[in-house]
Image 1 (cartoon, one colour):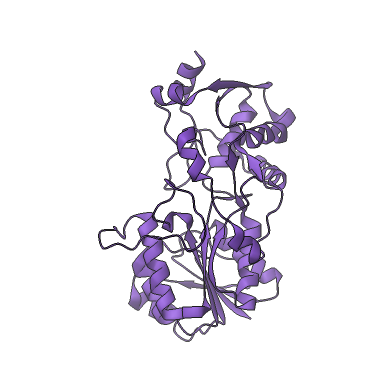
Image 2 (tube, one colour):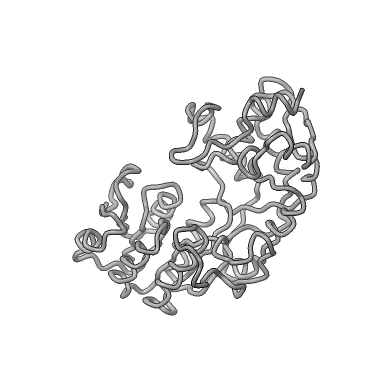
Length: 334
């Protein structure tokens, strides 16, 4: 099978490429060419996806059997691929749970929950952009489109630094500021390897429709995740880790930013809906969910092999540096 991976040189796209190669497919990538080259044996196509003429040039004579689109960040980009790749047999588009209009303020009860699509929605905003891109592709591909509304992705190679920050902070040891209300709070992730392999298998069999692609609610809790990070780091920590529990009011008064300074944390009243996601569509479609212990262990092994990734001052390219600033942490511990 000839598979085109759109954005196949980044983290998720690279995993999709490796999964497709492992399953014996011929693979090409379509990317801007700024994130490195794909593995040997993969045909690299370079274009600005928002430029219709540039995409037409790059795809001239290219007739893939299937597409896995991991890099949809503009509606214009969705239009270019929709116009040039509408004849493929299967197309998997990585959307986001942010496409749902009422989330995270309200739970996601299923794939039929309303998505953004009102006239006053700004297509430059992430959620409305994903929902609008879904519609553009659906008009071109109809029942050959699989919409993968992804939740949080984790695993080795993670460029976001969010779960990695917790592991790095455990490695520093000593008292670690943690929210007091999270020990029983569900959290959920999808491992990048599970998601990528499943998407390749999905285009092989022509799977279509929409899927909430994340792990099952209840697989772990925020508290268990913190304990797991501490345990996985283990003897690599400079000193024993202890918990410095602070309630939501104290964290907010100290200037702790939701989600950013303590990755995955929002106040308890907001968290109830944030993590309440119906994933029955994913389970019916066969999306695997490996144990979170394996994901965290493998991420720590990857971090240990990347000295620059262990640097507390390093920020992922183009992203806000995750983690608690030293001055805020000291004020909370003081």
